[in-house]
Image 1 (cartoon, rainbow, N blue to C red):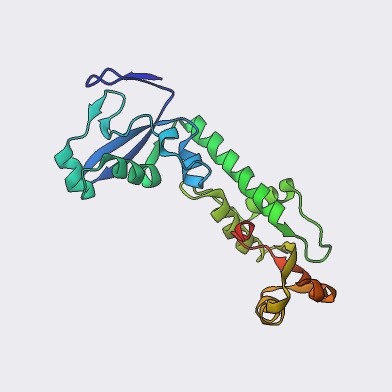
Image 2 (cartoon, helix red, strand yellow):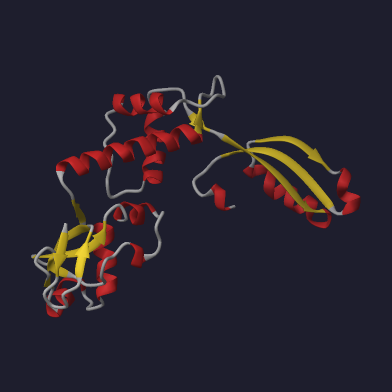
Length: 225
């Protein structure tokens, strides 16, 4: 779909419209297709890669811009970039039924993949396949929330699946090295955070380090530790 905006004659192509109703009026922004969900999931952080223009419309397809007075009344600000962020985060992505179904199916599989990667069968300590997690999600009638990130939904799915099947968060193996002079103090602080301590080697203390090899439950954000 190609759109001309009569105010500046900029040609907008490959448009995805995000719409929000606020203060009794409709507001729309023009985005690049496939970028809206990436922004909402946190995969895309550059707003310019998502928005075709930092302008707020009443009707994107007709190029009708929103009036500043209406924006201030509805959003409490005339800053169109900030308003675009609000609409991008909370608005409704306008897609065809076929496109919406395709997006929901892709998100469903992404959620199942995350769960399969983060969890194991506590009896066998082996991971579940993605297809098995998908079947389990269907059994609990899990409904994908398009405005929520797949990571957040994966955590929600894990909590729900624990009620119907044997599943637990996978352990993450950590090797920690700390300065010898801090070893005793840090050892006491670290141990409560660890699920299992496999080995603890203080032989390197003379060289200035203490090594602790441990297993820890994987939690959201651990990758950043």
